Amino acid sequence: MVSEEAKAARAAGQAQGRTVSRYLTALDSTKPKRGRQRSPERMQARISELPGEIAQAKPLKRVHLIQELMDLEAELAKEEETVDISAIEGEFITIAADYSERKGISYAAWREVGVPASVLKAAGVARTRSTD
Image (cartoon, rainbow, N blue to C red; front, side, top):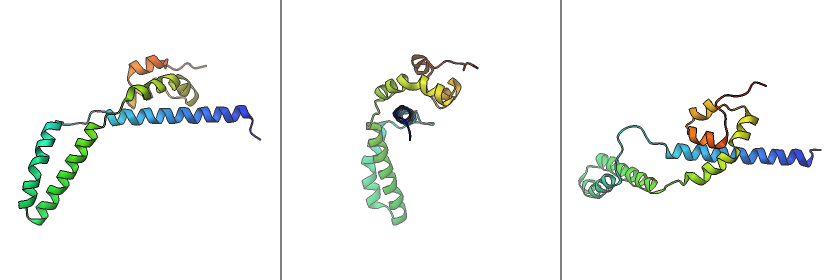
């Protein structure tokens, strides 16, 4: 039989894991993409041009233009979806030091996946692990 203390510890660990996962996912989704970025205005202008091109295109070209239109609309919608990372970041800061200690995750590992140094500092995650 598992004690209530053990159950509570497991539940807390799982909650911390979910918090870390949410934060790292949010970091990934807000990370700037490589290469030249299209502005929303340029995407909207291209979206406006495409219906005329689609109407006059041969079938093979038409399917490519329709896909381009769908991709642009999806990208534009994603641009409008802003992730408020501050709340998620606050939760991460609250648990990061304990989670790092418990799971043996180093400062360098957090930095490698894109966690800003300022966040780790606020969380109290030390640059070096103590070797007890």
